[in-house]
Length: 108
Image (cartoon, rainbow, N blue to C red):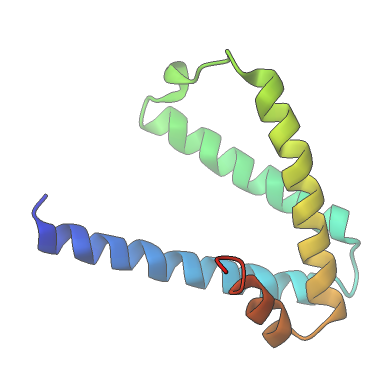
C-alpha cells in the first residue's frame, strides 16, 4: 500500500467509526425508552459477537486466537461492561451533545 492509499484508508476507518458511534448513541437513546441499559448492551453484544465470530471464521483467523491470557481478558471485559453500561445510562439522562462533548475531552 502506498502512502496515499493508506491515508484514504485511515480516513475511511475514522469516518466509519464516527458513523458507528453516533448511530449507536442515537439508537441506544431510542431503545432506552422501552429497555434497560443492560438489555440494550446484551442484545448489541450478542449481535456483534455473532458478526465478529462469523467474520473470523470467514477469513480463517479463528484458529489463531490465543487463550493464554483468558483471565486478563475477563478482567478487562468486566471494566468495559461497567463503562459501557454507564455510557448508555448517560445518553438516556443527559443531552447527546453533552455526552459527545465529554467524550472528546478524554484525550485531555
